[in-house]
Length: 362
Image 1: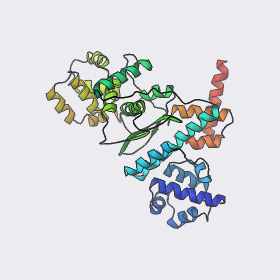
Image 2: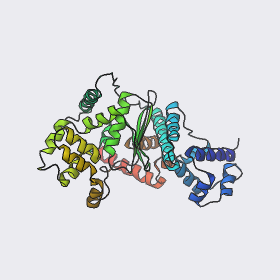
Image 3: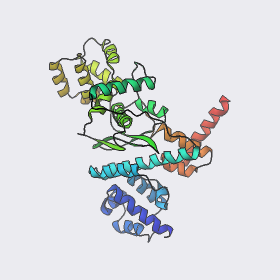
Image 4: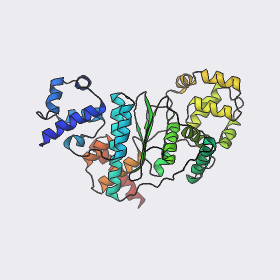
């Protein structure tokens, strides 16, 4: 098979994986269906500028079209199969596809650099109380991670510091988060970069990783998992911490107090208000009233779209691995720019600044 045929085959595979029709692609990229057919049949070589647009649309690297970096591994195929079973839109499946590629890149770079995957504890659940077990696991993890009784403003930062990649991509309205966990490759979390309560979503997926219930999980609206939901509450909002912060506010039914607490914990209003109710800080009458109120809309009007505090672009772990691999000449700058979605010139500038800082420190 020659290069043109490989490119054509990969173009068709990537399009079908994402669930796009030829008409969809032609309309989105401003080309004709006949032109796309020429590229996919291997009869015409697509320009690099178009390959870049197609790679972004399908959620792959440009190198994939040349027969390089085809994702392998049961766990990665599993999460893609689950995304298709949920009938997610092509735009979302493309981002899940990109998540898989980024996970595989992290695995490959760890192997090249001789960096082991992080060791993550495994908590076996029994037939006892889910509430009790979720609280015990949350307390154990807070102690293990050295969090004490403090607020966790960005759980993503905490997990990336222990080498668990938290990859942020726009997932649309139907998928909030996902995770894959494999004994050979390690654990990876995907979170919707457009979601305003990412802390809660990351904690939810981390709970799935800790209990090893599934190798792959996708969090679509309407799905429930009792252990993970209760883990989120006890991990992000332990009773002693909530009560300490509550004392700073004179009236918890005051809108300003609720907005402040939500922004502090990085959870949804429903999760916050329900937690305050179960700790006896909000009564039944106020619970129903506040759950019906559109506090999200008010917060957006007051502060703009809620966001986590300055999260890493894509993933801190990925950035470190890619830049280290470039410095050791294990990958090219052009390949690094493909992975990180920035120009080779920007990578050169970042490497130069890193070198300047390291030289001044020595």
